[in-house]
Image 1 (cartoon, rainbow, N blue to C red):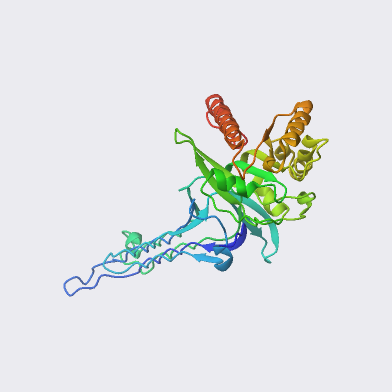
Image 2: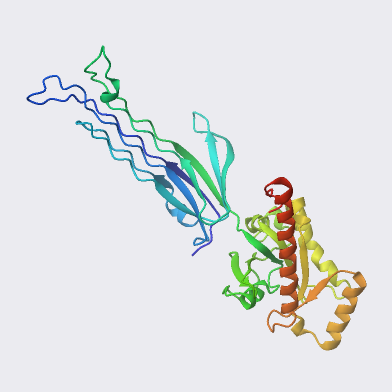
Length: 359
């Protein structure tokens, strides 16, 4: 399925059914009085987060979502049937913005109204109109035969912009062909496309790994970024926003792309791209990793490790292809995840609930 992470749609709830204005007329009851029933409630439009979807592509094909109207009331005190609610499934990680327009249909602003961050989360976006009351409700001592009923309440309609930002524990960051897809395919069941050319990965891939205690870690392979990504170069901002929803980063640098005299300096360029896009993102924890060490001789690898040691930086050396060093990197990833979970729990204990920044 093609990856699409933004769509504009219209949704409308159902109108309430009209109340009924009916007078009871039977052979032996010449003054039977009013017996009009109420109209049924219109259907709500409810958005529901699900892990089964990974794209907003379907919302580019279908742009209108309309709930059904409630049924009108009937005589003999029969109430109209309420319309079923309309459930719309969206990928977990979808931000829902309402587009506000003026009377001429010109854009004014947009406001965030919902963020689907968990599987199964349900949010009522448009409430269905209430059913109108039948004339049975308007009978009084001075008006025994009311001949009017209440119309159903109107529906709600909204124009929405959907934006998907993938939720993951770990974001794999790196230049094109840094080996991110190979790494995620080795440590999880994900099967990304792998080839010997740049920008092989055109959509973010998610992989899930478990430890011996059945703890889960979700890894997002973010498509290759290049210098100028924050200005839209390469795959640019289209995928930088997905890095925002990760808790920490694993920054892969291929030995083919580093400066042997200053190997750690190779991490600075993409880190600066993150900082230009979002200062908070630029300061996010990174596990720096040099990949493709299988292409080096023992002497070259020893020299590279010595140069890194001189810098004082903590850097992991792996070969995603052969698996060398991968276990040590995974151990560090689990350690970092446990540390963040502990910090999150402490934040909940102090404030009662963790803030979005802590999460």
